[in-house]
Each structure stands twice: as structure tokens, then as C-alpha cells.
Image 1 (cartoon, rainbow, N blue to C red):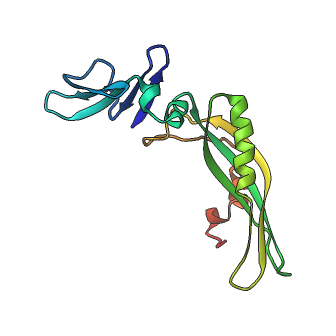
Image 2 (image 1 turned 90 degrees about the vertical axis):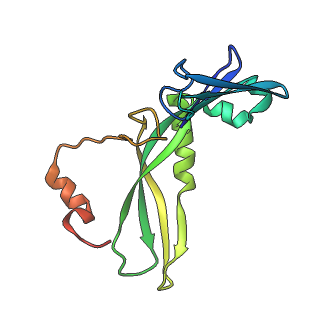
Length: 177
């Protein structure tokens, strides 16, 4: 499901399928509402494939319309853990965060804020204080398929040394965290 908005005609469309709201509907049910119009786009068999809202600024939440101008980005962040335990083995965490932004520049700002917000401190079952601190934002990139509302490739990463990857990744060799 996804939503688009055309400010030139103040019309929003919620797509339930890729063919919805693109003139593909066989049947439309039009309903006038206060300050706007709702159009249900349906297949010939009666399956709802989309909803159009005319006069969208008057009837839809501002946040919903703002979200249509944003695209999904994937943030790859690395966190470092520390502990008050004297025998603590240092651990790093690689995190993929999904954010929405209107531009690459805005995505960088949002990525930093979101990554900082995920820093954490807590006491484990042994009473040790564990702290996760942002070490580095490795990448901020548009989601590959441009959508995160359906299955597909979210992010790809390339590396040159497979052996080094195996040594870096504890789960690769079956080591417990």
C-alpha cells in the first residue's frame, strides 16, 4: 500500500495495488464529503484497489500529505558497547534504520538524530551497566526499490575481503554473542 499526493489538483490516492488510481479501475464509487470527495476505485469483480481523495488538504491529516513528499532511506550505523564488568568482551552492533526524508541532505540530518536516539544504557541480569554508543554512521542511502511497504531489496553492501568479513561477524562462524 502506498499513497501519492498531487498538490496541483489537491488530490491524494491510496494504492492497494500497482494499477490503482492510474485509470485502471473498472468501476468507481464517488461520495461527496464535507470539504472534499472520496472516490473508491474498484475492479470489475468489486475488489477495492484504491481510494482517491479530492480536496485532500481539507480532509486528510497534514502528516499524511507530508509523508508523500518523502522517500525512504536506509541508515547503516555501528554502535560500540562498553560495560562496567571487568571481564567484558567488547562488542559492536551493526544496525539498519529506516527513515523518511525529502532529500539526501535532510536524510543525513534525520539519520544522525535517529542514530543518536538509539544509544542506550541499561543494567543486565548480573547488575553490570551496559552502554551502547554510536560509533559511526557508515552510510545513508535511498532504499533500493524506493518503497518499504512491500517485500524487496532494502539495502545492499559490498566488501572485498570475505575472510575478514567472517572474522568480523561472530554469527558467521557460529560464535554466540
